Image 1 (cartoon, rainbow, N blue to C red):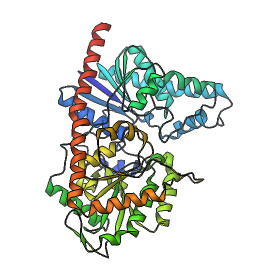
Image 2: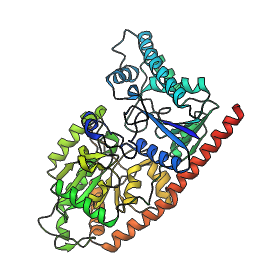
Image 3: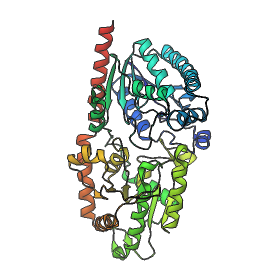
Image 4: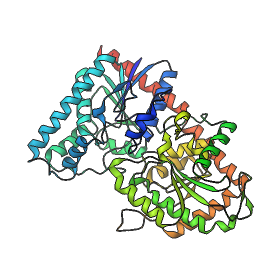
Length: 475
């Protein structure tokens, strides 16, 4: 079956090595390392393994069908978003806003129609474009194409409306109608899937019946011992980190809902109490001495829309007087050794001793699964979807609680007691090979059972079967 996967962004295909120009152009975006792009990459791999032909349509030039107008962080779309959901100030009124919206939609619809005509897919997988209104004209254009062509479509809803980093408050009736009608749209040729039970309930309230497919990982994708040792040494040398320094690792993007400032506070507390580890062997048989540091490594890439958060975050980390490194400039979806780029997973995790995941909201938690697959323990803020869909599976984490203290600042804080208790647990785990191994082995086993590629294959088989039956009914 010929399958087209559509999203605003995407990860490059295997073998892509043309990072030189891309690295400069995309320094302020996730460059295919965001969770949705990574999930698309996994789906493509599995679909092709199942014998299907797959093409990607995204804003990036490495897609088979690149469509730059799909970029949601363009100046044109930022202006549209501002006037639809913040303040209608750049147009004379609702009518002029609608006119410009329709113009943008018509261009995208024509381009998408051409792509569908050229590729002739039998089913379209759409990730997030039909549920998260960060580029509404693209959503409306794609919906129009799906209606006109009658193509079978599987819509995967990772995020919906006002969850996560984005908030949407219509500035006029037109904006409100777009939200109500198209997020998500409903048509008989569309099957809906979402990645958590909370979204499933929210969609049901809109009379949308959605099945759940959690994020998944290939738990067999690991660095062998020699590669792990080599990459760990390379990265630590590159960033002046000693082998027996402790690295707390953050792989999530630099956006407000990730609450990276909590990782800074945790690092500060761990550093202040690290004398408890001095002259003791760590879990990996390294000796921690007085000269060693606790280093927070931030590997997630930024988003231009949240540049102000990044600026405040980095200033805050400096004010803590901790050792921290931003390494996102060398992070890509794929390794390119000749250019000095490393894959977020599994490469960058090789530098780490402990993963910190203080996110306040996730549709599921891609970086959490990456930590489990990399064999690393995790200190985690108990975000809603974790408590509802992941914790019941029995995973073992160091809890940072689920309480955010009131603050006038945009950076969040959690109770000091939560940090202190978490640090005591982390110290115990880091200095016990048995405790470290037991925790990581348990999480890896649970991950393989509930979030592996076997689960993904079953989901994709169901989607393909549904699309085949729908095509037979239409014909």
